[in-house]
Amino acid sequence: MGQSPRNQREALRKLLWIGIWLVFMADPIDDLVNGGHTAWATALGWLGLVAFVGVYLALVFRHTARALRLGRLAAILGALAAVAVVMSLTLGAPWLVLFVYVSVSCGAVLPMRYARWTIVAVTAAMVLLGIPLGRGWDLGLVVPALLGGFAMTGVRQLVRTTVELRRARATVAQLAANEERLRLARDLHDLLGHSLSLITLKSELAGRMLPDHPEKAAQQVADIEQVSRQALVDVREAVTGYRRPRLGAELAGARAALAAAGIEAAVPADAPDDLPAEQEAALAWTLREAVTNAVRHSGAHRCMVGIARRQTLDGPVMELTVEDDGAGAAAGGSGVPGNGLTGLRERVEGVGGTLEAAPVRDRGFLLVARVPVGSVGSAA
Image (tube, rainbow, N blue to C red; front, side):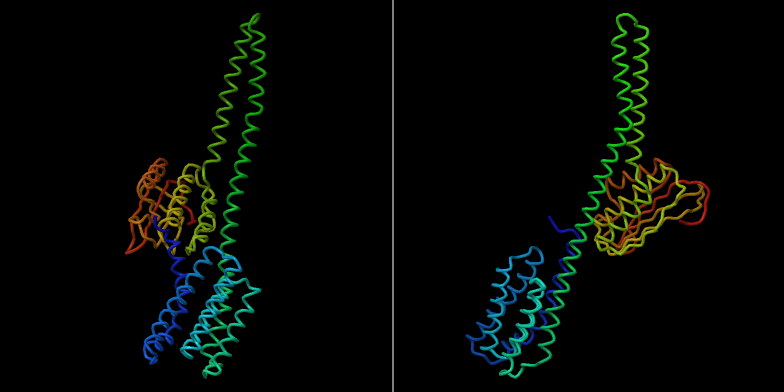
């Protein structure tokens, strides 16, 4: 199965950031093509260059995906440094740029307490080897080696912080869900505890009265039926209240979800406070589904959410708009294609509203839901 758009974008950014350093390979490649080396030296040079670049890319990509042990990292970095030394001594000054890659690799994979010393050590080794070759203090090599190595330590720390933040958000969401379940359990206990106790008591009384007082026993049975029906009503109301989403909560959830997905978001801070419960629930479900699909499937970079009161020929309505610049309905954009769109339309139409969903421009999707409300006031 293919990667999600967000994972594809992250992999592309990682490839561009790591691969941008390959521009320094221009000198070794030019040396192999125009350096006048023997055929054997040229062949070995190409072989060493391909092996070096392959190990460099594999090391950085593999480590960012799954951390390697320090001993294995040291062995791989030592091998890269050895190749850089051998190639520089045998083929000349153009190959000193390999030390830049060793420095970048140290910054990308080593812990900070080791990286800061190894970056300096690698740069110093490059300078010492370069002195007899006439490029010992070449700023075109020294600056990239130091700057690139320490820049990669910052990038690595940023990636680690981002991963930890996502894990923390997932933990908070899980804790919130657990707390909600516990609260529902407590409320159901409070609702049913008294009713079940009363049913038990009246059942015992009815059992005792049956032989001698059937009329009184029948009255107890009637009371049991009434208490049971009321308990059923209370449970349904409690569960319905918990299942009905709130628009304000969904707006906050949309901001968090879009931010976590790296999507630039424009989301209203507050929801209207005078919406009827059914209309609010319909808009909340619509917002939740649209944002979920924008995050998971559309590959969008921006998502804009709007809520406003409007006057139409059919009366005042509350209008919710969700627009993204993703792949659109064809690729699963926020238009919630298929059964998702059908379900949303039925939900909105069930409260007397309308739902429109269509691609916009060359790329993107616009979803508009309108539900009837009271008198028109200022836009939310």
